[in-house]
Image 1: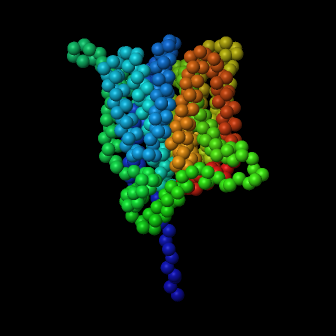
Image 2: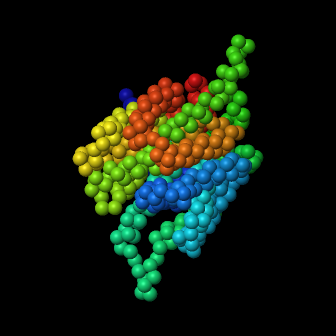
Length: 483
């Protein structure tokens, strides 16, 4: 008797084939990725390389380091005004133009304090504009199977920019190029040329890629464009396109967050209803702020001191820290859609807590007995700090970024994302001021991070939902159900 025919299931695609299948979705992030590289370079200039690496302690240096974060907060506030209302290219081209202006200021006035401040504010504003737009558009165009990897481009290319800055600064100081007339080009002029070039590339890529978010097209009542966009982004399968169109309509029809909250019973207090509406914001904010602690001036300066003695660097070893952040972000991008957000985040927080408490214990010992760094082998401590950076960059920062794009309804997403980014920058500014004024010792800073690691890890394990392989509508339902 012949065997009955069976339906053969489609084999699971490899990472490379999956990225090729959804290549247009990744191309939608190309312009934003270019901007993130430039923003990472300026961030490295602010708190990784110069002037942070020189330990200059004056108001001009402090203002330069704070300018980038002030600009990022301003850019986020501007993005909240028009993101989800106009085409994504408004944010991307504006960010590219801001980077071009910043680059021109660096080239023309490389040693002017006011020009440097305005340049940092411009690049920071470009970062705020682009991150809000990229998280909104990226989450809406991405297939649920690669949404985590696609959104992780923000962290990957930001760290790539940091790596580029610290590496070429090191090479520059080793070579010190001179032209035939004896004129020495200032290193910040090269930095400005790179910023302007990246800004121009971002503008060109933004204008070249015209595919919009299907949710925005639905809001504009362009039904035919929705079908063409979904077909270009996801392929030619008719059944898949029908399902995707229905997912978009379902998400678009629920434009008010109140529709995702059940009608309260008569015995239920009003404060509980409001608590359920704002809890997703504070949970995501908590994760984002913790991830920020690993990219602060306090942490970087502590690593500079340890690396001088532990890794025996002739200048500084910040390129090792930058490479650790890039490595963690790439690993997190590949793991987050495979193992899920909550598992990766909670495990990483517990591991990070153990590592940083060990580092804090060594610094506390050195501070208590007044011993010099030469009296102890700090190689292991330097390696532990690099391990902490890898864990936080891949296991905390990446899931926190993805949760940010999944936790809010489309009616409030831009404003919520802007609020989170502004508060994140305020935390950075507060930690900068604490570092300038020497308000906290290194050991206290590390012990505080360690305690927060265990607390935030427990919160993530108990209260954060798992949103792997879910549509945005299903993610909203998950955030509604979890207290």
